[in-house]
Amino acid sequence: QKEVEQNSGPLSVPEGAIASLNCTYSDRGSQSFFWYRQYSGKSPELIMFIYSNGDKEDGRFTAQLNKASQYVSLLIRDSQPSDSATYLCAVNTGNQFYFGTGTSLTVIP
Amino acid sequence: EPEVTQTPSHQVTQMGQEVILRCVPISNHLYFYWYRQILGQKVEFLVSFYNNEISEKSEIFDDQFSVERPDGSNFTLKIRSTKLEDSAMYFCAIGLDYNEQFFGPGTRLTVL
Image (tube, rainbow over all chains, first blue to last red; front, side, top):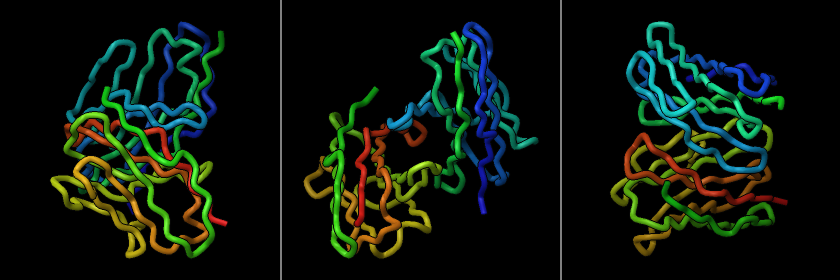
């Protein structure tokens, strides 16, 4: 069973703070890793993907991958109330995509 | 970001009936995917489609499911004989690159 685990939250941070979201995966053969944002009742929106160990930055978002620890994280700097959503971690394993259950983030003005 | 629409936005059907869900990419893309999300649960991969054929499918995608691009643009998911447990949001996703998947707004399927 290929698992992607996320803390369901809710995670609350004050506006302007850094939000840190974590994800672990079970299959060492996983090839690429994705972060999506999903607002209630809406479809997932791709934030970014990463496939090499280390950090990848895109604007206020930074994805971090550690394949040895089977761990991927997303940092959101200068969090805004509009960032309040559920954040989904997804993993590409054997050309199939496995999603976590998501972490609910609330940014408090 | 590529645009993709899905029709219908909501489909209500009786158990045992066939449904066809449609995905219409606004621009040309190479990769197509179907996912489903049962209310309150995780997004589940169903199938990926590349170069007019299935490239990968999950255990969920059994014989009651099929996909095709009947006219080279629309991408459809057919469920032959719906069951109560097929009630979910069905999302189409498209991409020019295998790692970039842009989701459509979804079709809510309700099986009675």
